[in-house]
Image (cartoon, rainbow, N blue to C red; front, top):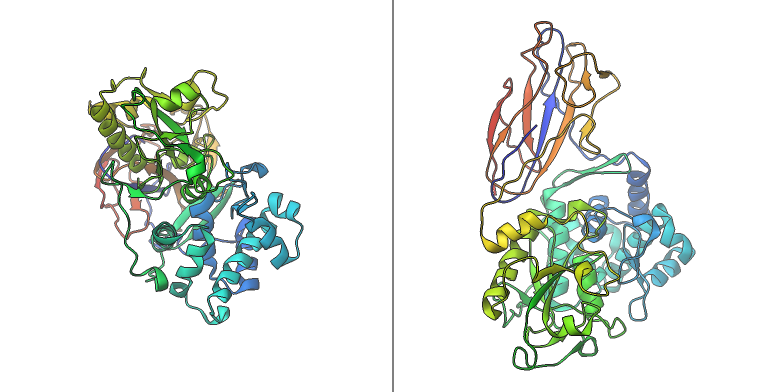
Length: 467
């Protein structure tokens, strides 16, 4: 399969019913509904039931925090553990609070996914109870204030965090974690914003699209750049944690770190935390700190799914604005990764970061994007045991291909793309040209989180996605 870049965000699923034999009438009963029957899914169900939390909301909150990745017990930069990001640092002790609420050992909450999820559910329920709610009588939309408190942020930043969780809940979630599918169907939930309803976001004075949430004054140096120091570089970072976690960490007086900007993965939202005239402590090199602007990007260097097109575009627009403002050459000698700062001990932004695409956006030169999904592409293909594997045909793509005998049932093979932007896509399918193979296999293209379907029964389709 090959796709061509458009604009926005889209996920496509391709359903193939058979690659060999004669044609058959395909059923339209495609696999839908929540999927929480594996070990992690069952852990979410158990925790939700134990504390009266809607399971869909609990999954959405965990997804916002970590994309359901526990990083093998490695803490985030803010000291957060597990898929629920239970935090233990001198200022934020949600891990210890969760241990007290559940009676579980803090060490178990750090490393055991089921225990960690139980701790997150207990925390969320405790925040709801503190707000005076009868937890087990609450509707999904009633949890907004409790979700906002889970962020450990205040004011508009906490509100925006909770809005993002509800956005994931409304859009639905379908991910694979260690071979287990976690799927939540889209939920039509209108949250009650409560005390957060009338908050006004303070905008950045340096960059209009950004919100302003100041870092703690002990985490940066006040200055008067570019008069005091020239601004010559833009340094690209990855948070090693969530957007909310990074904001909270830079507001934490014990962190001794900060960056000028933080960018969210899902939609490219930007928060400024240090004025451009001031010196953020981000590069690990005082000379570079004094002469650079630091931009943090939500995610982990080891997980490429965090680096969305929305993030790239928002970051590139910000970097271009900074470069034009201070006369910084828009090249890789001046727009650099944290790992390229002299003396750096960090590896971000890492191998997942697409420098060629990013720089094409910064300089506004042409760029392209394509992706190929094969039956051997990790995490992007699944089929039942009825589908065999063969390397017989010399016309195959790669080392082998999948096949199945026609049958009057729906037994689809699924090819899944994460397409970075909304627009028009050309989608191509390779298959062996052989008279004994079925050339009328139904093909259906489904846009995740919507009811938009492309016509079936075609080998090549042009799909126009919705924003």
